[in-house]
Amino acid sequence: AKHTDGAPATEAIIAQSEFNGNEASQRGGAVQLLGAPNVRLTDVTFTGNKAADGAALAAENSAAAFAKVEWNGNTATNSGGGVHSVGSSLQFTTTLFTGNTAALAGAIYRQGGDMSISEATFSGNQASGNAGAVYLEGAGGVVMNRVLLYANRSGGSGGGILAAGTTDFRLYNALAVG
Image 1 (tube, rainbow, N blue to C red):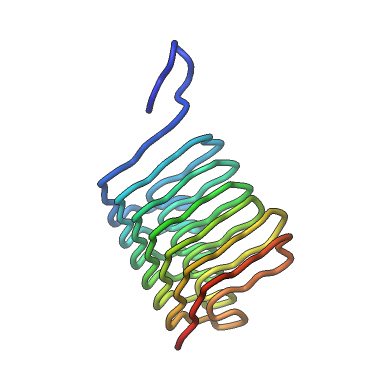
Image 2: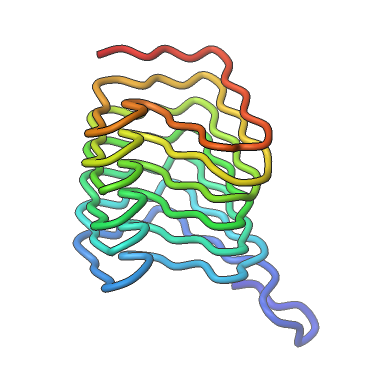
């Protein structure tokens, strides 16, 4: 964390790191962000983490940017096999979500807040309920650009993406296969 003139941390940076096999009984099996204003993760891998919500990462009222981050084989018993986000502003660039599982939203669960995803692959993610890969609901805007959705599965609706009441959802240059 970076401190300026005795002020509280204004940013947190996590780089070239791995989070493997961590568990939480509630949210954020590996990382939980609560009111974090400026978080950046670069070249990070989350593998085999477990939690009720957000097996790898849970964010609430936070702002975070993820670049070159991989989310592999994480398991949430409720929502967000990879990421569980409530009221947060999240930006994903060059990310890979593979083999994550949850009851709702195999890869990403987002409730409110803004989110952008570019140059991302969602492959083999599963939800026993809805949204095999991505679940979107609540106020805020979501932009997805240059996204590949491959072989994601849901036991209900939205094998790849389920947008339920999202204020502004835009999907560009996407390919959904399998």
